[in-house]
Image (cartoon, rainbow, N blue to C red; front, side, top):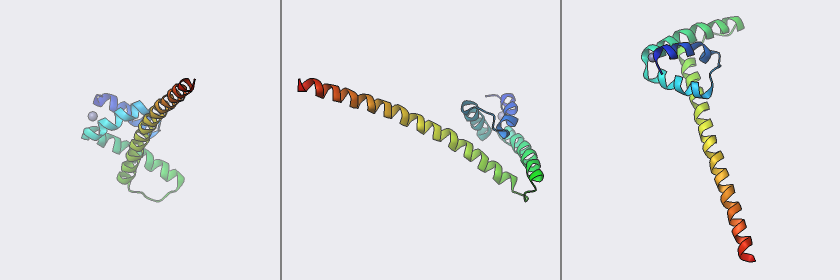
Length: 109
Ligand SMILES: [Zn+2]
């Protein structure tokens, strides 16, 4: 992903509009690119700060909030990957069990 592409994803990220695939690429980029991370932090601070003002919330540590948001996003992607692996595994196991049952049935006859 280029910095230009990452920049275009900053707002969709804040609005939680990225797909898992986009999110994954975006996170990987901001982890390795200081410029884009700073860009994200600036936008995040402005927009989350504004939203909090409207809600009348207390002052929050924006850097900490962003870190938490990134962490949550990461967990979401990782959780989904683990889920996918389990799904495939369970399918394979189900097929193996089914094959085993069929073989046992055939041996009985
Ligand atoms: Zn970048």
